[in-house]
Length: 369
Image (spheres, one colour):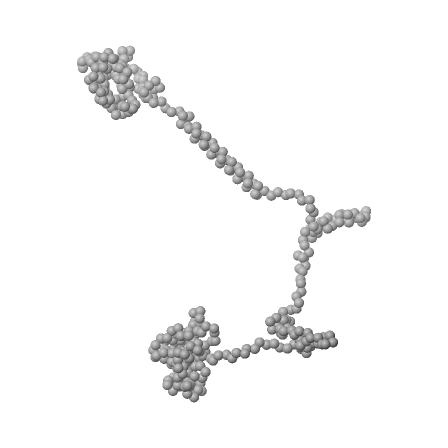
């Protein structure tokens, strides 16, 4: 059945020594012969055999005979050599710890638990770790170590000195050797430029430069003209230089556009932003206040809370109003061309606030086309 004596002992609650005695047909191993029949039949049922037939076979092979329950053969087997109790009783012997027990497993030794292949792998791993550590330590020492190598080439300053210059002059008898100073050694390896910086002068100071003679605003030079006999005629540039420099000032030939003013005839909140969204003007304009729009590439944009109180003054004419009274106007471009297309000129007398603004500014003529 593939089981050991210890497995049978654990399952049948019968000592392994009794199971071995049953298999060896040895009735002398039992302490009580009256229990032999029960042990044999229980072990036979455990093995799937006929209990009676197995016990009969055991008795025939071992010579064991069943005794009466009251007879001496059925009682506990005693040692005839021991007539009385011993003064020093011997301890009970453990059959599993005894080395002469055939069915008890033998304990494993320490060396039997060591796998040779695992031992070899461990040695290889330790050798690898040691090699890597030694290599890293060697590399660290090489990195931190500074080595000086002799150079055959002498320094530049020493190569320019004549070593026999002092030998040519005879030294007086009373002359004394003087050790060179620290400054002298420092002078050998320090360049001259560190003592006195080398300065290169410019053509002239910046304050003396004349933009009329140098740069973009300089007058263009005229070509030299020769006479028919080969003589050189002074050019216009030479003549101008002789008589004195002529001023060349840039001139703006285009007239500025008409000014655009935002006029408030009643109280109104006004906010004006440039093309980038930055607020350039924000205030609550009172009656008579005005604001002149700057001339930029992208026109600014107007936002007001009282559209009926805002007019535009362009070329001594009034345009507007921006919207109806009480209406909010947002994102209105302040461009002269766009405002002239969106609004028509308005007469001064149509709005009392516009009349007061015109009288304060001295505008009496009606501004109507």
